[in-house]
Length: 320
Image (tube, rainbow, N blue to C red; front, side, top):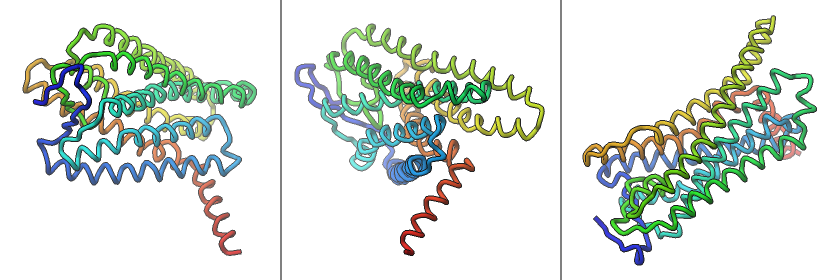
């Protein structure tokens, strides 16, 4: 165990899967491949939405923000994850660890609020189709998206500021792939009750409230869809919501599993649980951003048509 005094602590050590070298090699290739797919999938989606004027709508504007968020989130953590796989035990300076933790937490909080806003957008589009263009004008949905980012960064600023002030005088070994806030709080040798209360408040505002908005929105959405007389109309309405609902289930499912499961106090159980939490965090941090454009947008007929038009336009320019 590597020890450090709170006045001398200058770095953390990311253990990750150092006890499983073969698994590290496999995951290194998997993470690198997944990261490339995240950049390509979300990058294409952002380019298409910007390129095609027909996609300049609230729904695709929120999707564009989600893609930016996924690229930003993975880019803030992937270098550390790949480094820990290559070196076995990756040394990270205290400031670098705090900065990475700040951005990762900010992106997670922002996505929680953004998914709630997207559900609200679908609720207005399906339940109030005639009034929807007037309600969701550019002057409305742009501040809504901006508010998601501001709220996420403010929440992360609070949580990171509280964590930075803690003394770390026992050990500096983080049993994780990255500087994750719960893994860091476990190393503190002071009372973390304020951090726990603050995290509970954060979970209430950024997990429970958006999830409640999503649940209530879909209750009204389903009730409205069931009143649509034609089968084709019902299928079209459901298709605009099914992708969002899939993303919500994957996103919130992994988060609740990470933050709401009981913690084992036994040493062997704690080590196994740390490994399990790290792998779940990997799924949440890498697989979800890769699946988002596939589940949510690239299967959409409008996006497919926009991609074809964009590629066709570039081919014509080159031919000329």
